[in-house]
Image 1 (cartoon, rainbow, N blue to C red):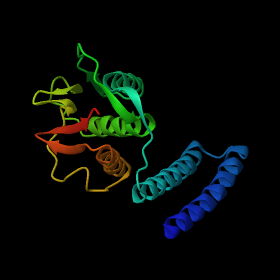
Image 2 (tube, helix red, strand yellow; image 1 turned 180 degrees about the vertical axis):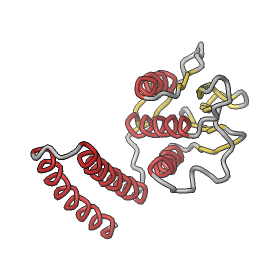
Image 3 (cartoon, helix red, strand yellow; image 1 turned 90 degrees about the horizontal axis):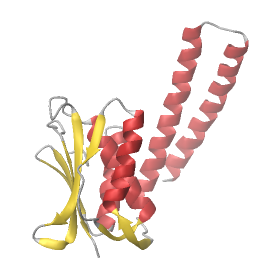
Image 4 (cartoon, rainbow, N blue to C red; image 1 turned 30 degrees about the vertical axis):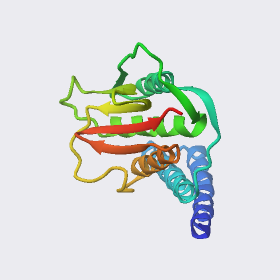
Length: 201
């Protein structure tokens, strides 16, 4: 992990120089394409630093602070609303008459559900159901103590998205799986769906 911290320090140094360069270019009213190039450079450095932070987080044990009353459907509804405001792709929550709630770490499980939802949108099958991802949450028919969350409408993938680590989104999916496993659950890609099972107690 020390290597990752050293790399982050180097990236922060590069970002500092790039920020100085951007200010000088803006001050001298350089052409827009030059300003855009520097903005992209800074954005790339930010993404690389974020990926390194996620790798550090993935390498550490998941310590949970469980609290009662985490309503999975309510949290998913908030996540879907937020994503639909910032993305051209749509994600909809299938309404459930009964609230599904349990004892979970509110912050960590919210992160995991958000990353799974973002990952689902990224892997959307545009020909499915009008080009939208649908999310459902319910208690398992054979085990009333288990919640099942499914993201439907994904395209067929040639790799396990929870194991590829091929970029920011895949790192987040791997970390989401680790958080879910720490809660005693599981996450998998099955029949073009993300399927998560979580024990409610």
